[in-house]
Image (cartoon, each protein chain N blue to C red):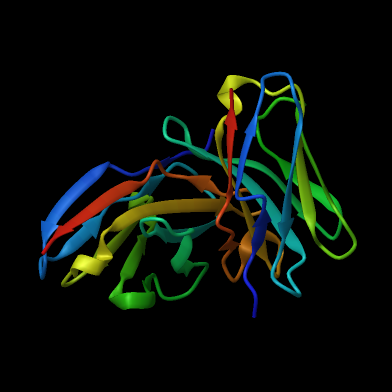
Length: 113
Length: 114
């Protein structure tokens, strides 16, 4: 069965630190990849997505992610985090021909001011 | 434009009862997906509707059902409620199948079964 792994369940960083959240999926075919964010008390919002083309995708609020097909990975990065980035981050995948999103367990990110 | 609207926001039901949740997608979006979110299981896909047809279904028992109307509004029904059905139920809409432009989520309906 297809699955998505987010390696870190909790990450604590200081402001201005660099961020990388890992996401690996298990599927050998064509995939569509997403990162969503859920700020405290708010609904899920799309950060960025990859369907094809340049494997380095840029999203909102300075986030980017790189699709590395050989590693089945889609890691999320931000060079300098802010306190307002405190949120839960979810990686999700759907596969060609399948309409459901498979979700990672989420990573709770806390930024210390 | 208005976002995805889910009603009600909160619901408390007793074991054995049934419940109906409603989702109004963004205007023009024809795809509506439903997800269950719990602390233990995370986000789990329930089903997706596109143009009134169920396109895919997750691994949930038959007590969970849904439908989509001609105006793309969707309802999900859970019959014979169990304590384990307590969760946040999220609806997401997209203009295309597979969320090619990404999904827009509603704020969810928090269901508590007592």
